[in-house]
Amino acid sequence: MFNGQIDILYYIEGAKKAEGLTVIIDVFRAFSLECYLYEKGVKVIRPVETIEETFTLGKIFSNSVLIGERKGKKCEGFDFGNSPSAIEHVNLEGKIIIHTTSAGTQGIVNAKKAEEIITGSLVNARAVASYILKKNPKKVSLVCMGNNGVTPAPEDELCAFYIKSILEGKELENFDKKVADLQVNGGEHFFKEENREVFPREDFWYCIKYDKFPFIIRVEKDETGYYTIREFLDR
Image 1 (cartoon, helix red, strand yellow):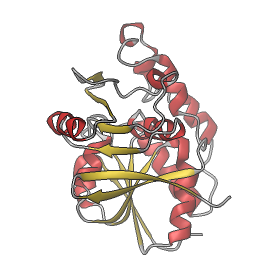
Image 2 (tube, helix red, strand yellow):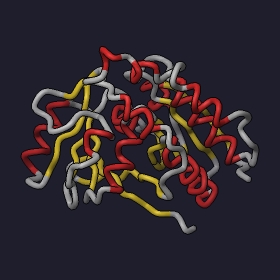
Image 3 (cartoon, helix red, strand yellow):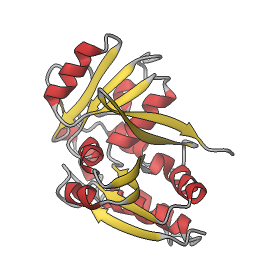
């Protein structure tokens, strides 16, 4: 059981306040997608703040793939949007992913006070909690990035409270039902026919497969900027 301090924070402003071991949470879809990208064998993911920076890094790294969105829509000139289902049948083995989003990657670049940053989503939530228990920091910040980093996203909050419940050794009541209810409370845009091109229904199902992946994604920094490392936990 975790005995340290757990703070749940919200949006880009919350990321700016985050301290200690910081988990930047974006369930729909940034950090769910990144787990699937690593499963497909990408070499590294580089999260960036702006579209311009994405193009710049794309020129620096010849083996790169540009992935990202603004307000859900694929950025013009990018290879893919922020969609797990879009990369399902794509060979990305050994590729360098340059990734920018409206919420998730904004949280990473704004978490300046954090001692360590990892990403979080439902698909690897238990691995995130296990990593925190292993590291046993004095303070944990769980940042719910929300929609576009500024408004509530029930799925991010559910993920944060799920991680918190595991850390505290408690069962989150009616968790399966709460996950299913995201269809009408947070994920309803995936089920509107007019949104099919931007928010494929398949993405919803990819993103709610909780505890699918036994690894965490840890954020590091070098002279070029931020990059992430996939780290498996001992089973």
